[in-house]
Length: 367
Image 1 (cartoon, rainbow, N blue to C red):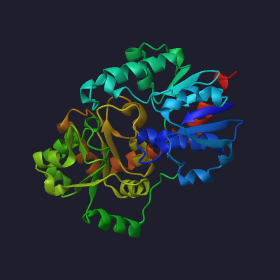
Image 2 (image 1 turned 45 degrees about the vertical axis):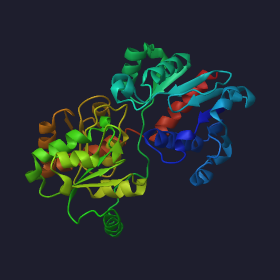
Image 3 (image 1 turned 135 degrees about the vertical axis):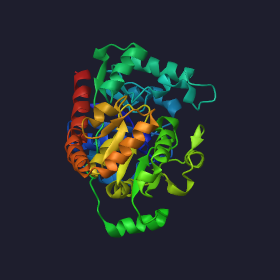
Image 4 (image 1 turned 90 degrees about the vertical axis):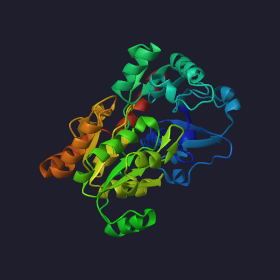
């Protein structure tokens, strides 16, 4: 088979979709099936250096092409199938194409769209793409239900292939490296509670900080470390911290590397991920893989991903969230249980499985 794939998300500053595409493509190449991949990216975006050392790299051709020229590429390159990894399907193969739709956050909450003319046109295009695709891949049963409800897709047109955690996400108890990181980001030498996600309103840093303010005394002076983009058109970490009276307890180092995040997960007293809406929620599994207790939302895909390995709370209830944080910090028996259950939970989500299921889907569609 000759498969075209949108590799644009893995170039530059990767977010969740970028890491999904990165690990999925890496593992599909490693499985060494009889598949030739053509990875498409914008002009001037060369393959990241580490791609050159991936197992199976000889089966990957990297092509830089403008989006305006993509329409004909499926025919020009003789593709059997094209996989749009980021909501769009820029071309087709002789057996059509598949598209990955990770979530429908802005369908549910269009008021948070930052597009100049709102979300309507983008939603129309994504819906049209979904109906034109041979299959829509999504990353959770929750997102599959959203696709059926909001886009009217039949269940048979949807393939659920969950995300995973990379094998290199493991606990890193390296005191020397952590000391260097503390100095670099000016993290005080005391315990801290970690939040990852950025100031995007769906990541819900506001409720997290409101909850922390309610139980401030019980947090025993721990730093509230909020990683990710500090500002968003709908608010900022610093503004919310000031409004909650937590300016002196909050640290916002901005976006961090995967290596830095692994260290921070591994040395945190607690990880809190109170997102209002997730199609999956990879940070929950990353934290579990690094053996830190997790408090997360009891809604959307997070309940499905976390299972019994986290404390689940209403993301709109700061009082309940604050109480859950205090419990998770002080109950040593519970903390040990959360760590053990978290490590077991992570084993259920692997990129090897995701790659195998994706390759099987390609093969079925190209018969």
